Image (cartoon, rainbow, N blue to C red; front, side, top):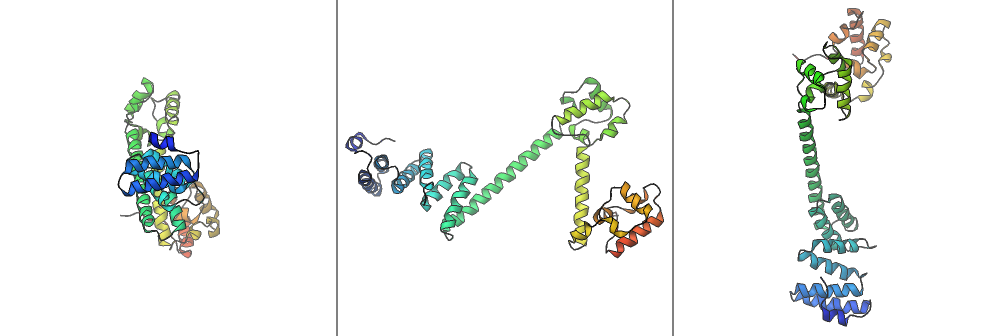
Length: 310
């Protein structure tokens, strides 16, 4: 909004005295309820002295009230970038930032208010709203990401750029979707006689373009299950993670037992406790004597092998 012609003609060169005159007239117009006139006079005062924080704020505030939010925010930003910004300018700027979804900027403004006035009631209430809005935004983004990811996993493999021979081979293996493919390891693909080296490399290249790999879903599920077991194990030991991280070498096992654990890539007591008797007995040359030895050593540490739920 521009100042009326009468005001422009009467305006002196940039001068705080001239600015004060228009500012006082604008305050009077504002008190009389003539907001449009007040804005015109505040603009004249601002032109005369753009460094006045009082003029800058009153102009921003009145523009804000009549819906000129972009101009208002620009002026609020000018106010809050001063050495000692007005607290009301910080709060009003935060409101406009939040309306635009700029939660980080809104939070910075309110925290600046609280740093100066920790008991500011309006700021204390507003910070809760901002943090709640940020949390909702994060939840929405996570949900959208999950939906997008699930939609990708449900995509038929026939939709991807694969040769006819490769698509036919996958169909015969009952691999219908991208998720089915991610559940399948490279070794499993190689075991299928109609799927040659060229087709396997083709599939791997297609997955790599999407940041994926064969057997990825199966690995993630196994890792998740392993973490769940490990969390249960920590709970049963009272959260003694240091004990679980100790090396199995401290058990001073026999050579045969140590070789079996090496084959299973068991390095810590926690790794060992996540194994079942069946997993250990499945190792070549691992017998009942070694099993009893390991169980006794674990018992001495207050630990034991994982048992399956019935």
